[in-house]
Length: 482
Ligand SMILES: Cc1cc2nc3c(=O)[nH]c(=O)nc-3n(C[C@H](O)[C@H](O)[C@H](O)COP(=O)(O)OP(=O)(O)OC[C@H]3O[C@@H](n4cnc5c(N)ncnc54)[C@H](O)[C@@H]3O)c2cc1C
Image 1 (cartoon, protein in one colour):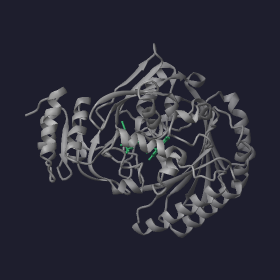
Image 2 (cartoon, helix red, strand yellow):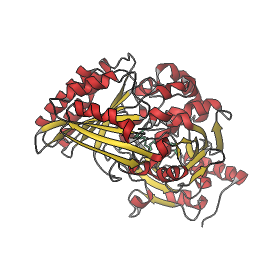
Image 3 (cartoon, helix red, strand yellow):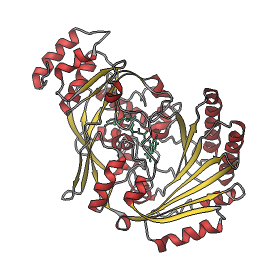
Image 4 (cartoon, helix red, strand yellow):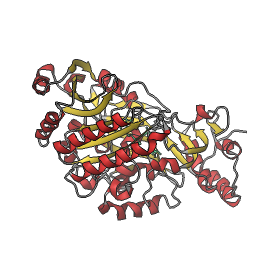
């Protein structure tokens, strides 16, 4: 039997549920009577489980799902939260499946797959982009491009738009538009009580503050409304990729240092250290995304030439092409772990030491294919938004260091984690920050709430958590009380 649950009827049913708590639950028997016909439910050992659960980007330390539910409607989602809460069933709402850290490995429960909420609306009259919970970053590129608009956003097409936003939201356009949370005007949120509320700077402003940086911990966002800007350079950009060998790396790092206070807003830069196993040498790849013309890119290209690259690719692209090519295919089930620390200054010597430690590691462990990235986005625009608007605390971060360990041999697990922690310690020491600045979306997971949200924010954040999610239903991947 399938029928809808609504209003006060829902409360009566839930009172009954609460009175008959079950330990060993049959998900279909419990949830299906209150779901729409299109909602899918599977136990972890059901043949169709993988059709119901969200695909996960990395299998490293992934949650242990006992089952999955893919709701069809927002009301289904509300009922899922109410029923799960009444039965003490742990769950996590997921979309892009790119969330990863050591903490995800401790998560057990039901995966709530948000994929069906995939609506995208470009509202030109109100200058809004409105996205559903199932929208991935790659889905918004064309609608925005066709409308001549932009929203600050992450880079990788398969990452969830709301998943990335609730931690901050950084990407190549950060220099131009700031963080995704800075353009986030309001959300529709399913709360711990199963209510559907609007949260904005006018409605529940404290909760809006918490959603901008800790949004996974306060409910399930069904829809998010972003303020749009005009897209840069009529939707065109110049992308340059320059490869340097070990004899040039210190010069490149020193050049980056000269840009510490003057990186142009329209230039996003990513430096990546990787290893070529055919030539047995480490490489430094400098990727530039320039939201301007060929002519305005020329000085950056001249600098790249002066620094002595071994190979280069430079081309004009549309923004659709730029974002489509950022993450390769939307892979899932890979085995990757990573970590981060934010840098407030460039220390060329430390970066060179990172390059050398990576090189040593590649040589010692032939099965290792990891990489280390320095994502440098101008933060002047980010700093224009007052700290008080969001729990996200690290607006003074200039470079986001992101390390990714990639390997298949289990024996590489322990040394590669040691490498990550050693590099992080080195970079933190010369970051210019006494308090570690950890971008929560890239966290390894051992940094704790102070590292993710800053010491000064914790009392307020915890008070809000106790008010809005007293049973701790949400945010098991980034716990506020850990
Ligand atoms: C390859 C790769 C590239 C990345 N690139 C970027 C980037 O360029 N910029 C950037 O800022 N970040 C980036 N990230 C980090 C990414 O933003 C975070 O991992 C983010 O949490 C992923 O969201 P998701 O929906 O894909 O993942 P999921 O695993 O589905 O969700 C992650 C977390 O967000 C919560 N969540 C998801 N949707 C909702 C919702 N609707 N309401 C409430 N909570 C929700 C989940 O409950 C979970 O806690 C990248 C990560 C990877 C692995």
